[in-house]
Length: 522
Image (cartoon, rainbow, N blue to C red; front, top):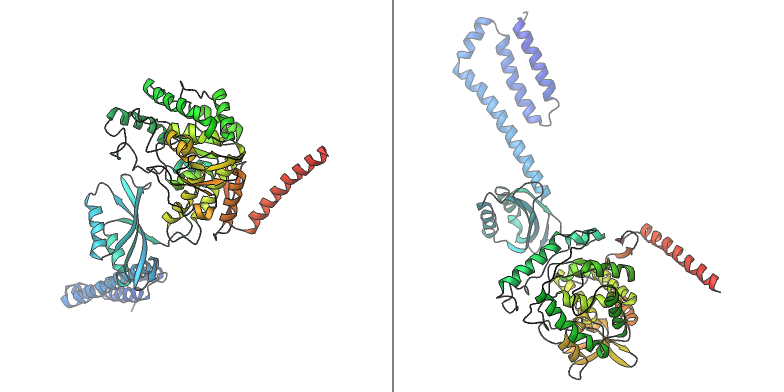
């Protein structure tokens, strides 16, 4: 029997639908839809009088709707199963004794105030132990924060925990633990190294001399904002110091200046005279960081960078690897000119800067910073804080409170000593214990940050301290080595033979220059 034109068009429509469905991934949905379309085609193909009768049949209508509904449910079930499988594959965690250690990243919008409390409630519900939590502004979404949470949860609850967090947060994902932690590889990366330790700030420490002085605290904040706005490559803004601030500097400078002659090492005395001649060091003037930085750059390649307070040990030592010294610009409270619970420009400019003008000591300081990154990534440490503490103590008993032998006498070269009248006198008296510097002993020696040190370590020379430090660190197992490139002011990770070969080629060029120079002299 010939088909009507309407039947012919229906047939073509069915063929097009089948052609589309053949490209589908779901065989089940494909078959169900074919069955529905065949039912519709048969209805269209019947004579017109029959077509008018069939739609009126409730039984047929129910069956037709049932087929469509079954196909829809099959499709939704398949989609849900695919999403569940995908989510299961994406969950990354470490298993340990029936527990899962999960590293979670997610984003919460600040405008949704209950979102954080609801998300934390999820962790509480599943009895998840949060080991680490940190936040940062979200660059993708305005008025939002990105969260990183490392937690321990029962193995069977991992999937449900993730699903529950997804109901409150966006961009939820898991990741493996980062074995090699970020550290600056180029000098501009120091713009990110500004994590402060605030426990000694006048706003936080009730024992700080400026805690009850709102004018001092406001002045301190204003000067600190200079450091927060500073970026690598900019000139360091100058500070117009007040008469009271200059008076505090004058009292400390004049008192220490006379003591240096008998207590400071010879390298310090030479550098201080140069700073007085070229950088405005005097009892009546607080030197500007930009002037001092330019002087150091010409002498030893070191640069100064403003910082708003006591920097974390890791960020401070990492800066030294680039020959950058993070230096405060504010000065201690006038009521306590001979002591400050935190670093200030007296400590930096009188304690650290003169020693950084000596080439040998500058090299030792850079080696300390560079080796810190290697210690920080060494396999022998179970926690980050232990690695940082270990490296910090080595720095503390050398650069901050180190003593050395010169011409049969013991002299001070540590910045903490050279900027403190009381401890400088104490360190060279008969009261404290002095030991020969050995990195193994200094690394585990407890130190005092609220009173004078009971123990000091004495080096034969800066060169001796540097070599002992270098030899000690070389014995620590670590995942890689690094090399500083002075031409680009960057640190290169030597993690493959090609990079090492490139370094050797550069070394050959340097040796050739020195060999030629010896030939000329001979």
